[in-house]
Image (cartoon, rainbow, N blue to C red; front, side, top):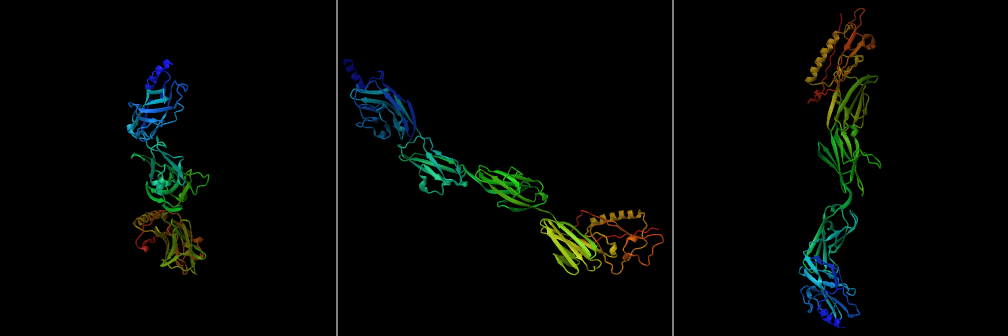
Length: 555
């Protein structure tokens, strides 16, 4: 008992640091940001059991340098001891029955920075200060920002929850006030924006907008916040087709089945664009895209280097997306310049029959002009019948005349649409019998055409001089009742020998042929294919008749 009694003063004064069995397990340096919480795990041991000191175990934390004989406590589980006011409800001890000295610190303040030591007491004899190992606490400025947790990807039209939390904050710490702000929340009730959990339904226009969670400490003026940019997934919308000529976008199509006229031969680029996130897969199809149809372009661009009849029809752009697809179509119609074919005329049993055709886009209309009269549409009477029809870019018209035609009468076919007009005429050649009717040019004009015609007449003269056949002795005369001859814009060589003529084309009495010789009448037609006549200001001057009749006689 004597050695034990000698140790009691040492125990009471806390000089047992060197005595084996006293051990403190705690982290040497703990750092916490201002206003946040931190938990410091701690455990201790001592060599004295309950057999030596059966009293209650009390634990204490002191600031280094404080006197343990006074009430300069930081934390304790002894209800009879008082804690400094600045540490009350902020430095807390857990249950010490299991030799636990863990310390929980909340709402850390800058002045809390310092060194702290632990003390235990049991009964009246065991009292020990663990100064061999102490806790160093360092409080730094608040730099952490709130975390915004998004449980799942944001989809337009689908409600979702966002959670804002502050790392290091604890439920039993300084109360926090949350506030949300952003363009995506403009339709929400403001009272719902003061919670750490935000429920809202994103829209496509919310993609790329900012969302901010702001956290404020209730007991202080400290504020921290974090801003994120929303990534909202949404299906294609606002699908458009841009049409460009020479890399310049001229038209943007927003509605489906848009009809677009394109001049023939133009180079066109079709550019399809869609607003979606992530970007949709764009492709082009001829006609409406079927389930397994093959695209003609697997990008949003479709090049048409030269537009023609093969490119007429519907083209569709499809924007395919995992959240949905969208299709936009347009119809190309090719504009053709006026092409007039004819007129061509021939004698039939019922009278003179002429036909005329024209091709253009938009489809042209045809009409006939007989002298000063105008014939158009479909109509019929005793002396005239006009039949007109059209299919696609083609317009056709036929004219049948059973009346007697006077010499010098002009007959023309006229084609026109919104882009212009063209006409070609056939004229009466005086002095020709029906059996001699040939096709003679009309609608030729201009100084250049006359020069070319003169050259052709010279060549014709050389041809006739070299002809081996004997010429006719005279020229046939037009008898009473014979119809005039009509000519068109095509020249050719026509030869009719006397024996092959119809009876009403016999020679006149005053021109008997020489004995043993046959009489022959020769005509020459010249063809100028592909030539375009120069338009004149006067309609009557548009086509002036040019013809030639040459008779060759051999001795």
